[in-house]
Amino acid sequence: MSIDSGVLPGKSSRLDGLLDWMQMLSGAGLILFMWAHMLLVASVIVSPDWMNAIAHFFEATGMAQVGGPLIFLLFLTHFFLAARKLPFRLEGQKTIWSHAKMMRHGDTWLWIVQAVSAMIILLMGSIHMWVVLTDLPITAAKSAARIQGGFWFVFYMILLPLTELHVGIGFYRIGVKWGFITDDRRGMFKKRENFLTLAFIVIGFAALLRFMFLSIAQ
Amino acid sequence: MSRLLKFNIFRYNPQDEASVPHMDEFVLEETDAMTLFIALNRIREEQDASLQFDFCCRAGICGACGMVINGRPGLACHTKTRDLPGEITLLPLPVFKLVGDLSVDTGTWFREMYNKTESWIHTNKVFDENALEERMDNDVAESIYELDRCIECGCCVSACGTARIREDFMGAVALNRIGRFLIDPRDQRTERDYYEIIGNDMGIFGCMGLLACEDVCPKHLPLQNQLGFLRRKMGITAIKTLFKG
Ligand code: HEM
Ligand code: SF4
Ligand code: SF4
Ligand code: FES
Image (tube, rainbow over all chains, first blue to last red; front, side, top):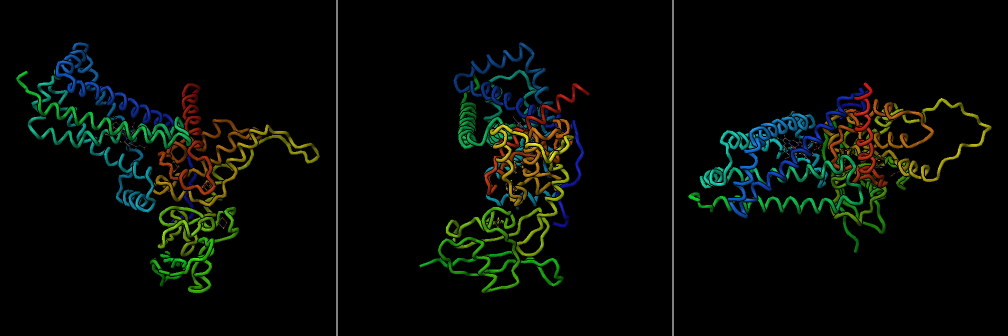
C-alpha cells in the first residue's frame, strides 16, 4: 500500500499474447497426453496382456522412443511458460497465501493447489519419466516389479492425485480463461470436472493396486 | 430479542506517527433492517468519533463504501447485518492507498485507469450540436449499458489474486472498460489499438482466471464472460499481427 496507484503505463507486447497461447496449448497438450496415458496404465486392470500390447504398439511405431522425450520437452515448455505467473519471491507467496485465507474463495484456493502441485509434479514427474524412458520397453511385469518394491507405490500414490488435481483444475481454468465456459455453465462444469478428477484418481489407484498384486512370473 | 453484534474493525491512521495498525472491538445492538452503513455510523456517533470510513449515496450507486467484510470485498451500504454472523470483521480494501481505518483512496487509482484505457469515445467526427443524435441499435445500446453499470467501487481489484501479487495488473474493471468501448460503434479504435493497451501481461494475458472479481462484484457485472471474450479477441489479434508483421 505504499504506492498511489496500481496502474502503471503498460507496453504492448505481441509476445505476451503468443506466450499465453503457448501456455494454454502446452497445457491442453499435456491434458490430452494424460488421458491417453491413463488408457495405457488402466488397461492393466483389464489384463496385463492388453497393457503389453498397447506398450508394444507404441514401441514398434517408435512413438515411445520419440514421443516420450517430446512429451518431456512439452512438460518443460509448459513449466517455463506457466511459471511466469508464479510468485517466486517470498513476499509474493505470503501475499497470495494471506489473500486466499482472507477471501475463503474456492477458485482462489484452486489456483494455490495448482501452483503447489505444479512444483511437486515438476520434480516427481521428471523422475518418473526418466525412470520409465531409460528402461524401455514398457511391460506390465516391469512396472509391477517396481511398484511391488514399495517405494514406487508410495511415490505414485503422491504423484497420481496431485497430477489429476492439476490437470482437472487446468482444464477448468482453460475453459473460463478463454471464455469457453460462460457464467451460466460454470457451476455445472465445475461439478462435472470434479467428478472426472475423482474418477481418474480412483482408476489410477485401482491400476496401482492391480500392479501391486500382479504375479510377476506371468 | 435482537442480537448483540461484535465488530472487529481495522484501525490505523497513516497521518499520525503514533498510530499503529491494530483491530478495535465494538459491540452494538442489532436493529431492524440494519446495514453496515447504519452500524458504522452508529459506532461513530455513539462510541468513537475518530472512526474513518467512506459513504456517499448509501444506495449502492456511488461505489464509495467498498471494504472487506468478513474476508470478502463488498459494499457496506448494500450489506445487511442479518445476512452476517454475530461477529463481523471489517478491513480496508487492499491494493488501494489507505487514507485511514476503513477509508481508501480509490480515486487516484481509477483516474490512472481512465488515462491508461483512454476511457472516452475516440472519433474524428466533429460534434454538431444542431444535428439529431445518431441512432444506435437497441441491442447494442443495452449491451453497452450492461457494462457501463460499473460503479468503480474497486471490489473486483481487491479480490483479485493477480492484482495482489502484480501491482501493474490492470484488473477486471479496466479490462471491462475496454470491452465496453470495443463494442461501441462510435469508438473508432481498432482491435490493434486495444491490443496496444491490454494485449500484455499487465492486461488480459495477466489474468489467471481466478474469477474472484466475478464472484464479488456487487453490481453483478458479467466479468467472467467479458474476460473470456477479451482473451479470445486479443489472442486472435496477436496471431493476426504475427502474420501481418
Ligand atoms: C512441470 C511441472 C508443471 C508446472 C510447474 C506447472 C505449472 C502450472 C501453473 C503455475 C499453472 C497455472 C498458470 C496460470 O494460471 O496462468 C498451470 C496451468 C496448467 N497446467 Fe501445469 N504445470 C506442470 C505440469 C503440468 C502437467 C504434467 C499437466 C498435464 C498433464 C499440466 C496441465 C496444465 C494445464 C492444462 C493448465 C492450464 C493452462 C492455462 O491456464 O493456460 N501441467 N501449470
Ligand atoms: S466491476 Fe464491479 S466490482 Fe469492479 S469496480 Fe465495477 S462495480 Fe465494482
Ligand atoms: S479472473 Fe482475472 S481479473 Fe478476475 S480476479 Fe481472477 S485474475 Fe483477477
Ligand atoms: S455509499 Fe455509495 S455505494 Fe455504498
